Image 1 (tube, one colour):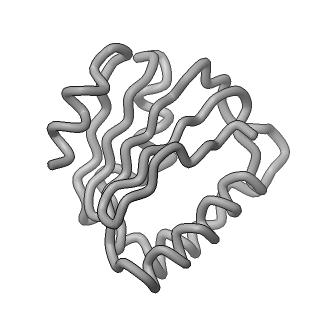
Image 2: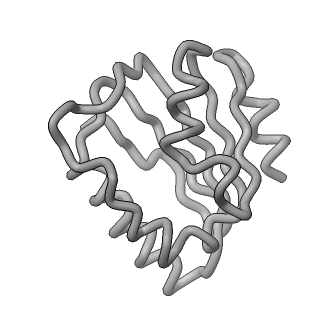
Length: 118
């Protein structure tokens, strides 16, 4: 599975995203997030792009209902990955549209990203 929840504390989730991302995998993570919102409330996300290869074509990526109804429960997002994905991943995550700050860090800066989340 291209999305792996590696660490999930009460206030920070660490996700590793690799390969080609499918809509069903995003929906599975969103379902886990809904359960976490019920138990712990809001949280921050650290997303590690590891040999990420983009999004599966032919899938409905235009569904923003999760963001619309629950986006404010994610309070800060840091992404670490290859700079070639920076613009696309920031657009995918709605950077600039959501209240939560979203920041991209190049490969090798996971520690800096984690510090920025605090």
